[in-house]
Structures are given as structure tokens and as C-alpha cells.
Length: 443
Image (tube, rainbow, N blue to C red):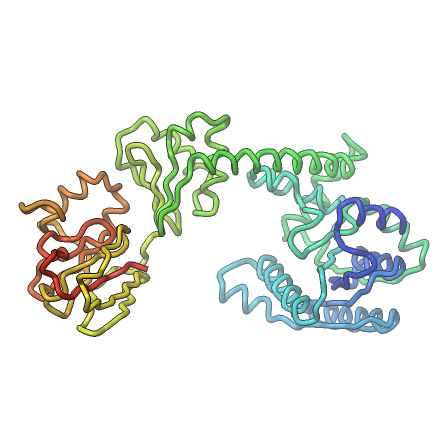
């Protein structure tokens, strides 16, 4: 078994056996005791970490004492942390299991960094992987859920994932190792235990090699996921354009892809859009512009040629003022930087839409930054007549969600001098007679 684990580590490039120190998560149960013994025997530099979740009273105290003695027996560094798991779960409104998972992995990563360790090893094996895959499938999942537990995920490694539970038990008996049983592993309250004790035994009657079969399936799904990931990256490179806080996805390009809904879901996952919502978005491709879809963090609008994605503003944008001589203005996430240039003759007007060049002597301070309103009008640069701002935004084909984000900078007399990021007012433009220039840049 030692050689099998060594080969598995090398085959999956988990870590350097000679050079990388590893933090091993040890609960005191059969799996983690085997993991610790195996890694120690094949010569890995090891430190032991144990979590006390404050959920099982004296049994949990006994687990901690057992693991402490075990680490001492091996002559290894030992770290323990005591969590108020139920209190944290109630505070965050999550289940106790979710709270325990978050707390332990957060602490493991903090400990890894502080102690200068390379990776965190957990004792997951093939049976754990099969349980995870079936549980994910029951709840509904994509490719990521179908490959179950990953062999390596960031700084988390699973050196025993190539072995079955029976392999671990046989090793433990052969070595005469002691371990602690966790009674909560038999409680039907937890979904995983219900699956473990009621569902999987039936499936193993159909396929006695279920764990190995599921492990092989996970490897194949992992390969398919990599193919999909590369295809999504290639499609994204063609379809996606980012501009400040706005992301554009070209609809025509998306429609040419294979499995459009799947590809778009992968592209929209970082913005918080669910699978069902993405199906609705794809169904809206032939519809008129203006269809809006909201995730918890972002807003997507189906425009003429693009899907336009912007962050949702959860707070109402107010009115902010920029006084004479003030160089910075931070307003609900938008930052403006102002600079006065005394020598207008040698000033070169910036080409960027994110910077306005204004005749400083035509401006009356303080300047006001606010949302645009119905009825607002200005004289777009190059035009001599008035134009309603609403009409200007239509002419510019500004998507609905970007219209909501448009700000105007006004002089103290109420005149709009800049539609921020779009157009300067002709009345405040820099001319040959201009002596001083004020530039205002959106950062």
C-alpha cells in the first residue's frame, strides 16, 4: 500500500516527497489515522492539525487527546483549534455541517501559511468520492459536481483517493493501529449518512465494485471538464469584451457555439447566474432589446447585439460635490480625479472618453456629480443645439442597465458640463481662447 500511495502522489504530481512539508488533517478516525501513518512511513515531512468543533462533548475531548498523543508518538508538530461551530452556524444562517467545513478549511489555510507548509492533506478515499458524486447528482449538478472530490484543489491534496475503504481498513488491521469512532457518522440526520447506510448498499448489490467504477467515471468526467473549460476559454476570447465595470458578450458568436446554454452558463457562473436563468437568457436571444435578468450580484440586459453585464448597485447613488481645488471625489464606488492645467496653449486634449477636458474659466464651483434625470438636456460636443439626454443615450445605443449607471457632472449654475464617460458639453469645451483647462478623469 505504501508503494501505491507513493505512485499515486507522483502520478498526479501532488507534491514533492522530498521537499514539501505537509499539514495532515487528523480527526482520529480510521481514514485520517491511516493517512498520517502512510505519509510518515514514506518519509514525508508532516505536521498534524486537529479540529474540535464543540459538538460532541466528552467524546470530542477524547478525540483531541487521542490525536495529541498520536502526534507525540510520531514526534510530529501538533496544532489544535477549538471552534464554536453552532454559534457560527446561527450567526451566518447556515447548517452546522457547512459551518464546520468552512471553519476547518479556513483554519487549515491560515495554519499552512503561518507555518510555511506546502499543502493540506485530507484522508478522502474512493468511497467518499462515490458518495459525493451521487449526492451532487441527487441535488442537481454540472460537470464539476460529477467529478466529485478532486485529487488536488489549490493547496488541498487527497493522497488516498486512489484507494478503497477496505484497503484502508486492511492496512490499519495489518499495522495494529488504533483509531476513534465518531458516532455522528451513523446518525441518519445527515444526508451523507443516509446515503451511506441506506442507498449505497443497494447500489453495491448491483455493482460490487461501485467505488472503483465511480472513481473511474470521475477521472473521465474530469477530462471532459478540461475539454469544456478550454472550449469555453476559446469562445470567451471571441465573444467577450470588458470595459471598466461592464462586460459585453456578443450574441451572434454565442449562437454559433455547440451547446450554447452550457457554454454561456460557464461564462456567467462568476456573475452568479444559475442554470435555469441562463436557459431563460438563451431563450431571449430572438426577443427585442431590453430583457433584464438579475443575479444576486449582477444585472444582465439583452441588448441589440450583446448581453451587457454590470454589477448591481445595492445602495442608491446620491449627490456629491467637488469643490474648487479638490482633486479627488469618491462617490459610491465611482472615483473622479480633477487636475487644473494653467498653460492651455500647450495642453493636448485627451482622446479617452473617461477624461473630460473643460474650460476652467467657464465653470462655476462646486461641481455636482449626480444621476441623470428625465428632462435633463445638454449640448453634445460638436453640436450647437440642445438635446435631451434620454435621446442622446438612445442615439448612442446605451443598454438599459448602463443607462441606470450614467452620471452627469454639473456646474454650480446647474448646467451639465459632462455626461461622465460619454460626452462633454459644447459650452464648456476647450477652445483657442481657453487660458486654463480643468481635466476630470473617471478612474
